[in-house]
Length: 308
Ligand code: ASP
Image (cartoon, rainbow, N blue to C red):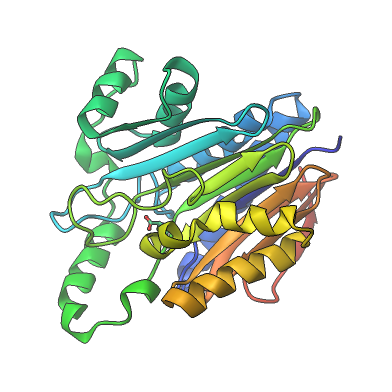
């Protein structure tokens, strides 16, 4: 089986010109990290975790360092991961002061009898697993502070709640043994209430992976994604015989027409086909397969290069 990894950097309403280049580099690097893991015989779970860690560590993205701030100016993060081999899954929500929520989600999957830990319980588990606590400020960037200020100022002049600037990171992969996996990680939505949990840690909404079908990671307006179970809904359409693109168009179209919710998805299936689709203005993405790296940000834009 030829390995595949696809990553996204979140559905967005607009990405400024100067940021685009940094986003492009970050997304390409994450796909390269994931692909290298697969080439060296790593599992799909290893690859999606590795790719998402790279994006969490990159301050350009809304996950880990660079996460958006809640109404109190704090970072609270959500993440989830799933192994398509046996449907095992792990998730954390409202976690603070750790660099890589996706690593904690994987530990929930592999080291507990549960699927989902939150807030204080998740923090205690992180400490017990030896995950270092870092100062809260280490996750906060100048850009995220400005973003919150702007959001608070613009509250009166509201764009639709479902369509404001979004962003999250995710990865899907197929490994040499035919296993698929997904990982999704986010700081959520700017100016959110403290304790708000979005779609990203909720299996079926923020992502899904099943070797019998494929894997998906989603991004976009969390409340809309939760209401339609975007990840599982898309895979359902594939089970019904739709292509990956058709399935994505159907589920994103349903979310938009029913709720005015915008978002994006990345997909890989059990035979190694992959797809990226979004209804937001743009979505940084990259896909690595057969030694080639394909990537883009805006509709109709695809660049292909050889992988290093
Ligand atoms: N889905 C994420 C959330 O609502 C945000 C995003 O994907 O941009 O928490």
